[in-house]
Amino acid sequence: MNSSSSESAELRVEDAVAALFLLGFGGLALLRRGDMSLLLGEESFWEMSFLVAPLAILVFLVALRYAIGPDETGPIAALAESAGVVRDFLPFLVFSVTYASFRLNLVGSLLGADQDRELLRLDRFFFGETPSVTMEQWVTPWLTDTLAVCYFLHLILPPALAIWLYRRERRLFRFLLLSVLLAGFIGSIGYLVVPAAGPAVAFAGLFRVDLAGSFFEPITGLLDAARAPRDAFPSLHVGISSVVLWVAARKSWRLAVAVLPLVVGNWVATLYLRYHYAVDVVAGWATAGLALVLSDLLLAWEERIRNRRQAAISIVQRQKGPEDRRTSENRFG
Picture 1 (spheres, helix red, strand yellow):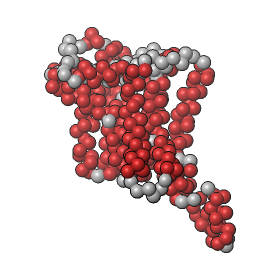
Picture 2 (cartoon, one colour):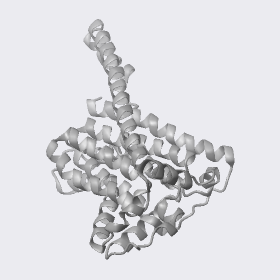
Picture 3 (cartoon, one colour):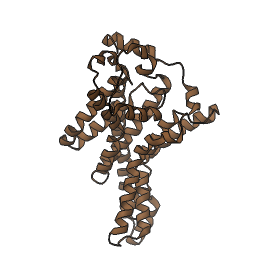
């Protein structure tokens, strides 16, 4: 068994987190035995395609390389590599499934009363007014279009960075996807505990200036068709884009500088476009920080376990003769 095959056969921390994530929501479904129908039609699943896109692109590239390249590996190896891509991107798939679950009538039945009034009260206590209202003085069509694009890029940046890292730095790739998964996990708990629709929905009467632009309506129309109805606290737009910025900075300062204006634009857009309260943004940063810390701890813990296992295998191999080493390798995995 070569090293790549052995690695692909091992249980990873992201597998355990993904399983825990799905079991939690599956447990809610079994306990409540509620209505599992969706609150959206098939046409609204477009958003999930952006999360699956990295997987589809990489599987296509594997197939293309096999089709036009030298016949060195054969179709079985190409299929195995494609299966490995699917597994490596599993956190994106789990995240998409979990977010989509908030459009189930079942999950909707678990939500309590909306907490928008409390979130607005906190904004006014700390900032005098919720920033979305204050930002009305900035409203212009060009700024609205620009920030709508920045808001939309929340769907593009994580998979784009994941694709870029996938062949270059596998551990950082895993760190990114695990952090995204954990941020989604934490954010989902926030949606259950503090359901809120956001200023534009809950307090439309506060706004006197309508948002309009060439790109604004198409972009926000698509986003609103697929977003969960009570996903304000914390802001996962802020949380996940913060994870992207942190991982980009770990890779190189040049990459971080390139990503920074897009990420900051996304943060501003969450308020300007009236999707979030300021406390949602702060909670999004906290969500990102917790997800990043947990990812580092979990990957370090996994590496310690793997190193101890490899040390045990080495000791057994030294104690046995050459003819027994293959049996030892098979026994330990």
